[in-house]
Length: 141
Image (cartoon, rainbow, N blue to C red; front, side):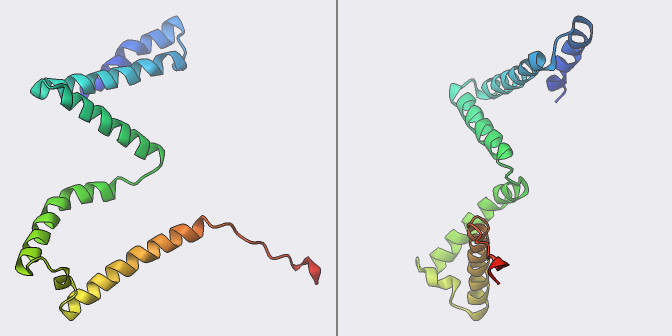
């Protein structure tokens, strides 16, 4: 992490003494961060594939930050994904591939219905919030 602050320490006197503008120095910071990330990705296994993966996910992360995606659900999904996959495989093996095991018992059916209703409500609210509003004109009275 300290490596990301080195350009700031080096270039700060240039901005103050020589009179470089912030618009001229910011691309140097961005280039330095990308360069450090590429070198770090390559130095682990010395494979160019790792560099492309790092650049791909860096681009995805940048896009998600610009579109204001929350980070907490992604971290939660990353942590829970392996356990979810293992439990799903076990359940499907027990039921011999039948998906009705998730609706078999009343409590399981209740929670699956609750989950599906929650997803449907979220989609409905999202669609409704982007729908054009129709103004009712009361001036006719």
